[in-house]
Image (cartoon, rainbow over all chains, first blue to last red; front, side, top):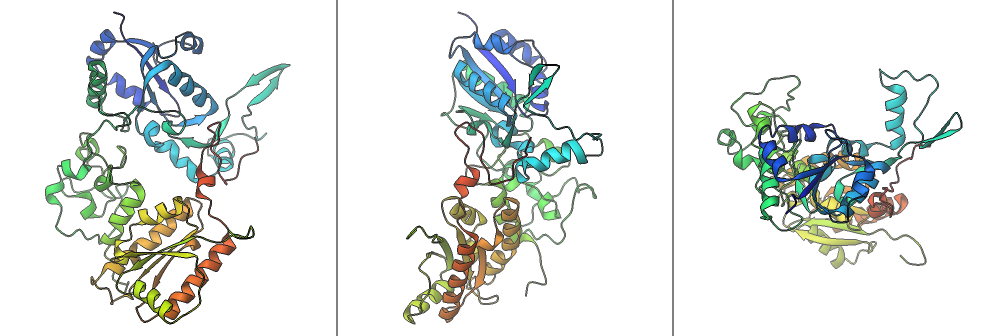
Length: 289
Length: 157
């Protein structure tokens, strides 16, 4: 029997998710032995034509990271969807939009202005902006178009599973790959992480007082948090109450509050508003009456 | 929508102890006010999770009213203070989403203030009517080609 074919692809991503795959260290050898990698732009030289040459559904699973930000990403993920039996949204950006998704708070025009004119490193006196088509010496050159918004993967194609995290921890990646190879998977559409909130597995949960009262909002940029105490009770914004666990509390162990990269728990329809709902009443305000 | 004119759809989260009774009182007093608000009775304005407000807006409401007991009158001592603390943050968040914060209003309406209830609903209806439809789906829905169509300004490049 031939080995199952696996593809990795990146869209608007920082490369951290690729790093996480490499972080499998020697475990990656076992993965490579069990599967046949047919696409991995960051590490191996495969072209679009190589993927197009495959039969529909020939790839067993595609791991796609990054948000969809360019028409190029859109074309690639649609192609991979057609060629793959299973698509896994890999990492926070593909799962929910992640850091690139923050750009949706401002217009495309403003993004271009900041990037090409206003940023301290921009030196662009001719005010050149990237165009989808430009003519150079009689040749037409094409660039992909910048979409109106950064989209999570499932707004563009159907996604079978979500592997959350920024980046997903190597143990979770290995667990997911093994589950796929063994065919032991939860129902389609599942997020491959526990449903519980991070607080439940947080080593600092014990130190949380019965009534959390935030006297002063603190920021890790200006102060060093107490290495033992609950961040929220100390006044640091920690997304633990509304975020899925399963990350191994990497940030907490590094004395950093949770940034919510594993996405909302199933109960929290919207991570941000849920956190707002839960945290706003904790602020001790004396002037309200 | 009648005669092609825009009729705002409003959702009201009314506290069971004061504001819902206040709305009842407006009815008993036969006060006239616009029929645009769909009241939802909640146990306390402190129960109104900002997620509810966002959900109402996402599913077709053009505006939302949150109404509770006057400060100090809360049946649960401090539930309305919770609503009061969440409200400014919610408005700030809506603003970042590109939604006019005037669409969401927090008011203290006691059981005896039927007149105030009628006035607040009239005012909110007119405010939202002037702003026009929220059209959340149109603002956020992906276009057929997958390119998201927003009301945001598009770079002319």
